[in-house]
Amino acid sequence: MKLIPKGSKLYSIIHLKCPRCHRGKFLQSPAYDMSKITRVRSHCEECDLNYKIEPSFYYGSMYVSYAVGVAIMIAIIGFFLIFPDEFSFLKTFITLVVVIVAGAPFINAVSKILWANLFFKYDPKK
Image (cartoon, rainbow, N blue to C red; front, side, top):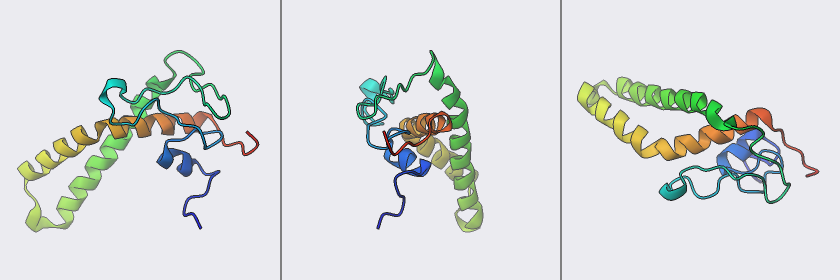
């Protein structure tokens, strides 16, 4: 039994799959391929969904990326505040910088698939 079944937006987001069919790849290459950093395909190879419904469509994902980054930072700060023996401003700052810089390609990829899932819905017939 799968924890996250096809048909849920979470399945598309976690697996970086087409928001409509949940089979086709969403990105041209893996998130950490720096030569094509999180480039979105023009359309799905399975259901032929046009991912780029207008020019600069994914500029809106920058707002989602900002929100995801802030959520990660709040989680890290919360972790250090829960364990006060481990808390220091320098350690917290260094941890924040390392996690955000190292996770930037993944955050970017997730923000684009989140943005796409706001506009496309799952269609099991496709």
